[in-house]
Image: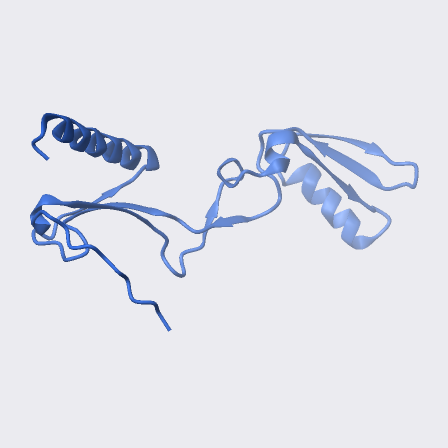
Length: 147
C-alpha cells in the first residue's frame, strides 16, 4: 500500500517551475567498464592462480597467455601452481554491470508539464551544472525580491 503524498500547493503557476530528476530504469542493467564500476582489480592489479596439472587449469593458463590481451607476470608457486600477477589499470576478467541513471529536466512540476519539454542530459556533470545555474537564478531572484 502506497502512502499518500502530502504536498503544499505551489505559489506560482505550473509554467513557472522546472523539475530536476534522476531516475533509474527498472530493468536496465548494462555492462560497464572496470573503471566506471569502481573495480578494485582495475585500480590495484590482481593475481590469478591456476593449477596447470588439470585440464581446466591448462585451458585457463592458455587463455591468459595467448588470448586475454592482459599484461602480467607469471611465476610458479611452491605447490606447483602458476600465479599470474596482473598490472593495474587494465580490464579484469569480471563482467561488471550497473543500472544506468537518467538525468532529466522537465518543464513544470508535479501538477504537469504544460509545454511537454523534457531535456535528458547525457552526462551527470551537465545535469549538475544545469541544476546549479537554476538554483543560482532562484537565489538571485530572491535577493532582488522578484521571486
